[in-house]
Length: 317
Image (cartoon, rainbow, N blue to C red; front, side):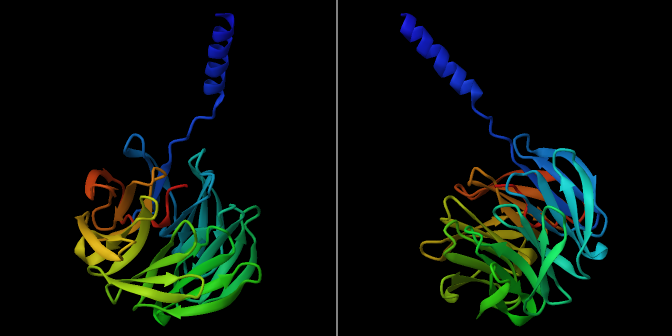
């Protein structure tokens, strides 16, 4: 009996000593409202709104969830939001046309695409100094870093291409042609497939990253803007701006299997850490729709702010 009691105490002590999983928050840039809405995903509501000047657009959350980086095109750079204090702690000037933004998997570098200068700035996340400038294609927009932190992928909107950048040398190793006006892009957890939303050709290009070769082009609805993966990379969800919908693609068959109506002018899209629920920001509605990637239904709608855009990874992973 003594030994069983000790065992029970030991198990209980070990259980309560385990770190509690933090609730992920979603950070939604409201471009017309010069603010960022903070959504507590457990409560399903906005718990704070932080003023961010400069028409906030792109969003990238550090891997540990400690900081949120928000591109501010009119302020020529990005703002740094301390997610614990829920306040802007730094404003970083980078270039005239800052839009797409991404953070490395180790949280040490921030990448900012300049729409006008056709470059991507590499910024040290410690002191916010620009440590390199990468020559990209024309009007770089969406950015994403490979899971192994070796490659940066850049959607070059007006070149109708995607560039693969070696992050050891900050040089473009290969550029692949995709659809017309690529904008948002996402990558699978193994870093093997890249999915690109092509705004003007109303389709998604699937690239094999090793050789940067297109393996499929999937037709979706009007003006696809951005994409996110869910359910262990088995489903790709794509926002269709002019259709008020999200296309759902089966990544095994590379076929569209569903269409989910959401708010007006859906743009940014990001997946919850549960890998099942997907959050979609709608520009005209100023709302975020929460989708169930398994049932292909909207499970809730959250009011955010004016001109909700949230272009990028706006939920910490």
